[in-house]
Length: 460
Image (cartoon, rainbow, N blue to C red; front, top):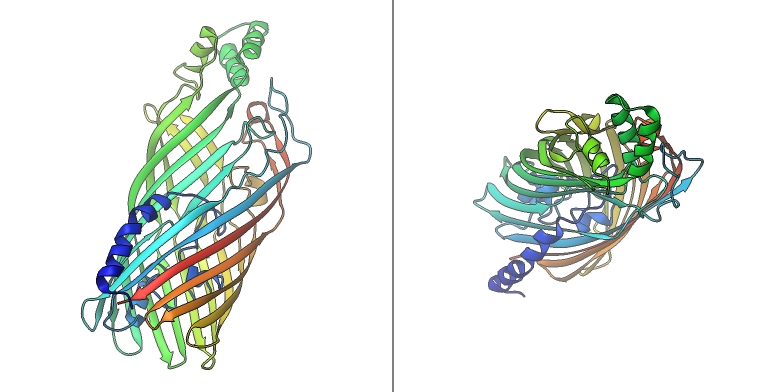
């Protein structure tokens, strides 16, 4: 059995790597939500997530679950999920932007593998109160296409990264009811790049300044295309709470809620320069969206409500169920403005809708050391067909999960799981508001996600 000092040294040694790895970004659940906060839950497709309370990861899913961890002991859970999305576009007749050729292909696989680590700690304060602390990444996204692809003026690289610090308390009301509450201090940063149609901007700007259209067209052809990068970050507060009910010795119910978090991102818009002083003057004009400088964006991350159940069928089988709601409708658009005069740098209509996710799962205990898990889930996408973009070509998805657990001793466990997510084929027909400026991307996406997770947990 590990000593308390040995466990502490192990946790302290890997904590810097966990914090650094939390900035990895990739979408696992619908849109850019990351449910992958526990390898023990991965094997059941996170069915029963707000009721299971099997290890310290309950700090994230339902802080009330700390009441049901091993009595009188501290608990630690440390894990990582490797997520590999496949994002492949097939062109169906896209239209080039004004003054530009169509592009050099479909952009390759825009998905890439990324680790999503997580770490949790829980300890009793007295026989009623427990304290917990979690490090996680609740949201993340990364898509990146090859340069010069058919949709380059709408997207090349898109990245959203979060880091969430979540201290929490649980309170044991009686033998059947437990309550939990936590606060969330969350950091977010985003980066969005694309090719920029300088030709169209210069033509429009030159004509607006009274330049002869023929001369304006010559300037446009000389301007060609450049690149733009919008980057911003912010820190904000949220909260989470939950309750668990041991309605019988064999059945436990749980409900949990994570609040929306409102951000005011600040950062910079950066645009490449051309070799023409005249073109640069037009692009850098006070009214040009491509002038660059300090920017901001207001966005609200969605809230989530989870209702879960756990039933011990017998001494071998456990059954779990989950129904969750996510408030994605809080994101009607993604808009960046210049800080000096509030003019728009870029605005993308999203018109997202609220979603539901349903999951069922089970586990089978072979003996004192081994347990098998399986799960199935259906996850709605908030993205409607009419506003699907190449930055997030999402659609409804089905999870198929398997996993297991090995317990080398009474108070320690190694959990592992694998999930394949089948994503519904996603049509796209979008011009980002202007075919002349951005082209029209027409075709479909074939997407999927593979997730492999492992976690070590111990009570001491």
